[in-house]
Amino acid sequence: MTNRRLGYTALLAVLVPMASLMAGSAEAQSRRGRQAPQEQQQQIPPAEQEKSFPTGASWAASSLNGKPISDRRATFLIDANLRGTGFGGCNTFSAAAYPLRQQGLVVGPIALTKRACDKGLLDFERAYLTALRAARKWDLVDGKLVVQGAAGELRFDRGL
Image 1 (cartoon, one colour):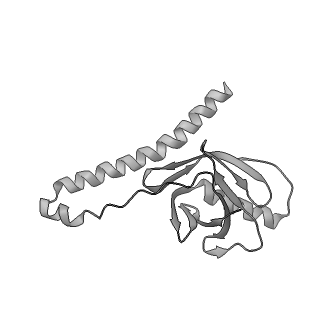
Image 2: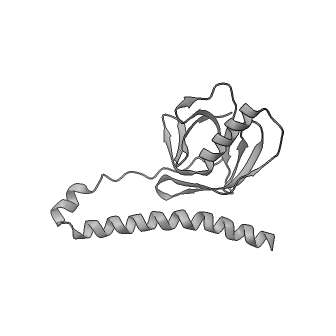
Image 3: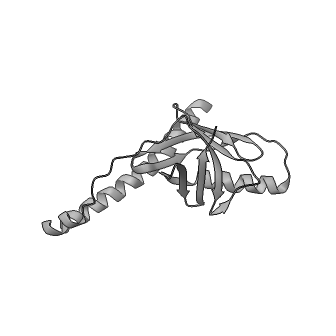
């Protein structure tokens, strides 16, 4: 029974963001259909090659919401089985993580160890994991992984 619930939760975590992406796409197509053919040609952006999320690569957080992370250590990795794992500064975590089309990203509910750490470290970890959980988009910019969402932006350097 518990596995079934987890399966439904993971499925919903993927379908809800995908439905919103598809709805936005349908709305944009509907607007394009109402424009004159000449306008449509002018507004079509040049075709870009879709980027692939670097699964299996380890990343070390370098900034959170524009503030450098130099005194803390936080990591993130998505493996080939779409399992996100890492270290939040105090605890290790794991979650389902789904790179989607058009550089979308969904990070499912996070399972976290329960180590005792000082308040400053726990506050940092909470902010880091909240930003990761709220992720909606990713990009690779100058060799760095940039993850953006409702709770802010995370930048990662390639880890070892």
